[in-house]
Length: 143
Image (cartoon, rainbow, N blue to C red; front, top):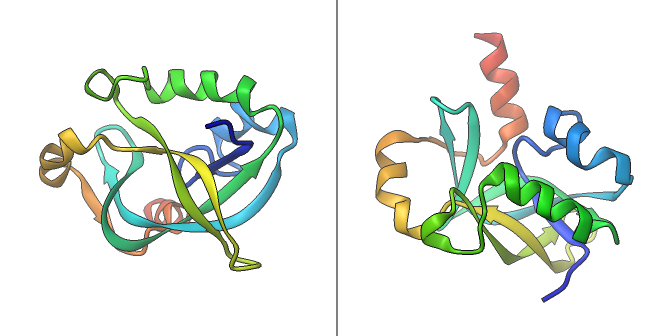
């Protein structure tokens, strides 16, 4: 399915390095959005990942741009997404995302932790209970 929507919650958020590197030049529409799942912090890697397990809120933004076919292959590379779940670090799925301002639910691409690696994640990751990476980063910098 082809979509112009990408939901992000971590290093691709506006203002962060990967946003500047891969997205900013395309000037996408940016909508505050949320979805459900569980967010984990990977301390050894320094970034968050999300699983579809759980019904917690994942806070982020949705980018809308016709340039997504140009952007996604670049992001696939940094997320180590190959199209084959067992050979990918993260997988890309189309998920329901709620736009905070309007309450509208739309479909968007989203990078997720593979279900086959959930047990490893539960042992090595740290749950971010409120699903808010930007807040978590601010708290980390205070310490």
